[in-house]
Image (cartoon, rainbow, N blue to C red; front, side, top):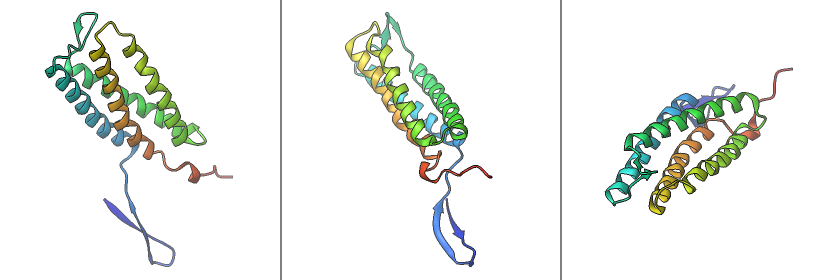
Length: 150
C-alpha cells in the first residue's frame, strides 16, 4: 500500500509506504517463521536427522509453537523499547542479537546427535532472521526519534 503525503502547499511530497503496526508485523513474521522452521525440521527429519533430545522426538508442531512464542516475546520487547528506549531500533537489534546467541547455548549442549544440534541451531537462526528485521523496521529510524513535548 502506498500513500502520497501532501505538504502545506498542496503539492504532492514523496510517496511513503504504509507499514503494518507492530503487532501485525509480529503475527505475520511469526506465522512465516513458524512455517519456515517447521519445514526445516520436516526436511531434516526426511533426511534421517532424528531431532530427538534425550531420546524423545521433538514434534514438527513444536517448532512452530516455539517460533510463535518467540515472535510474541519479540513483540513484547519491541513494544517496551519503543516506549522507553532512547534509540529503540538499535537497542532492539542489540538485545535480540544477544538473546539469539543465548538461545543457541542449550542447542549446543543438548543430549542429541551433532546433526540434530545443527538443525536446532539453524531453526533458531531462521526464526530470528525472519522475525527480528520485521519488528525492527516498525520501530522507526533512531535518528528521527521524536522529542517529548515541552
